[in-house]
Image (cartoon, rainbow, N blue to C red; front, side):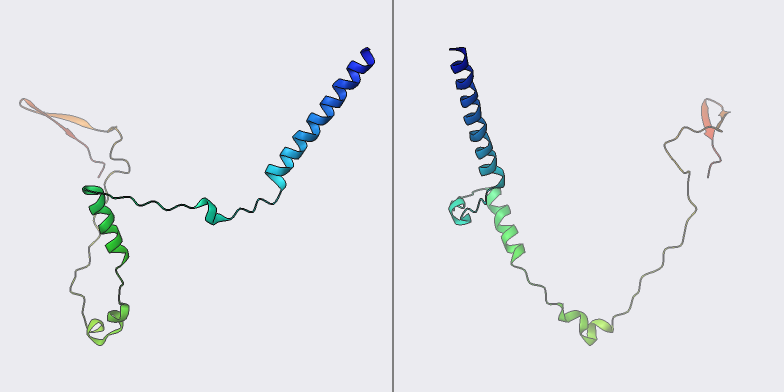
Length: 119
């Protein structure tokens, strides 16, 4: 009888392994072509208040078409630059948040002033 119990266990284990292998193959390796139209649904949503206004503004922005022919016109090309160049200025400390290491406190009456020559 023990022989039949052992063989029964082996048969059940073999069937379970076959079923497991089939499921792994089906879900990971089989060609899962699904009609994408079956997965898509449409839903009409009515937005009111701020959400609706924001959505309408985004849709209006998406509809904007920019005509870039203005950049090739002679009027645009005849424009001149009237700006001024920014002159370079001296840089400050490398790390302005680092503690001042060579600062020397100077006392003037009741007011203490820290002088730092890192600049």
